[in-house]
Length: 171
Image (cartoon, rainbow, N blue to C red; front, side, top):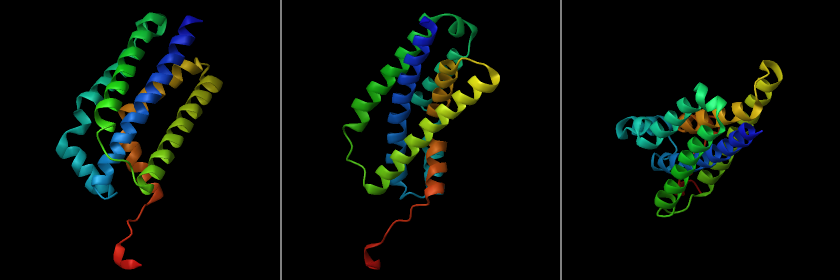
């Protein structure tokens, strides 16, 4: 029972961290004028894929896959605390100091969050139904996986929505 509660806490912490990381990724995509190739080049040039926040999420993902984390609810709570602390630090240090998103960025953010939540739920349901694995544990791992790959999710949703920037002279 405590393992399930710890996994649910991990899901909540990972989803909060995912939302913060997606928000920061949308800000960076906006700087690239919503152009996916320029955004990818900016990610590579800035070293964003190997930044500390991505490596921390990836390290927690690896830690959550270990036998000790699967057997001990205390290990999952510690890992959830680490991810939650990162989400809080990033939210208050980076998001509060930047300006708000425009309509296109907000639409892209909301769509990405909804698709991410649907993916987490779908993966959990499929693994619980067909593989007979604990749904809360699969949800935690899939949320961490999506958080570590958030720039790729942003690029995919950006390509799916295909936003085109309007020019002022096209009125």
